[in-house]
Image (cartoon, rainbow, N blue to C red; front, side):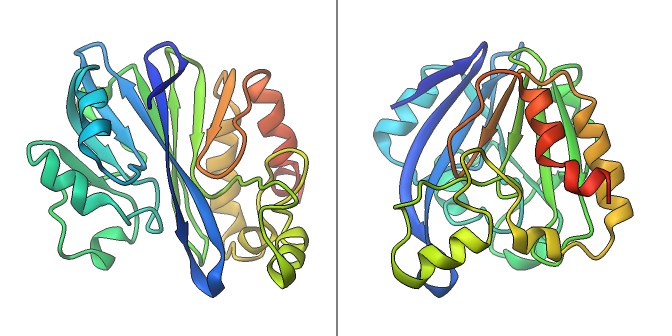
Length: 231
């Protein structure tokens, strides 16, 4: 159920969810174990007793982290299962989900319990969503939600397959979808944030929708965001 992705980081696959216009997406979450043995649950998938038991075996859930305002489907389930955990709100989510209790904002600040273990950069200025990208130092993993995506050519059918191809979602390597590229209203702010991300010594790149990159992560990211940095 949980698969080790690197030192002190695990992933779990969740159910497929439907988005706008009938597009369906696979879901993936990550669990990071801090030196305090507290756990950070990133982009939680559907909760189940079996998944909860596997997570509990790693440590105590201290933080629940939705990476952007789109990854909120299963938050209520996790807040109910772990009422003492802190949910940190990325830009836009607090307003969207007034039913949830947030402990603070995930806005590129250093979370005290993460000091020297996890870095956060928020990529702003996008009409679709502002995404908080994480870097887990112990495993050298950069963690993305929707800014990087990759689907196999057969994942979507009919006209959705054509749209996905035109949206750069079915490339051989994960890519920034065309709709996200066009939705940046403040490219200078986004470029500044991405340059911080490119400075991370990333070995691996984990994404919510697509095949993770298991080596040469920094070089991959420089290529994936070349269109923005050089624009």
